[in-house]
Image (tube, rainbow, N blue to C red):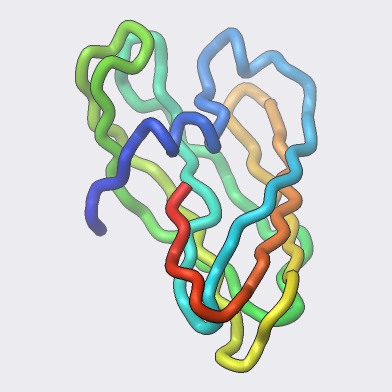
Length: 139
């Protein structure tokens, strides 16, 4: 799998650290644009520790699947420079993709549960706006 930008990954994944691991569960709602029948990145999940190493990756569960498409998760590596005290790092990640059916146009909604080490859980309600003529959006 090719390397992805960590700047986007860190914003979306809610990077886990000892301080963050104690936060209560939270729900996040987002909207992503997509074209019909195209893989569109909807999530990047990493765990960067204070010493710039990777911690255990979160578990990801599809709570409610999209009605007109499918979600797949792939393994990848994320590179970042100048993130907090880390001048350069490369860590494993999970990347989630959505792909609608070829004939679907409109909004498709899905819910993902992300459980980080330490007990923090994040529920992500993602609305994918599938419209013709739109290129792949990277988060």
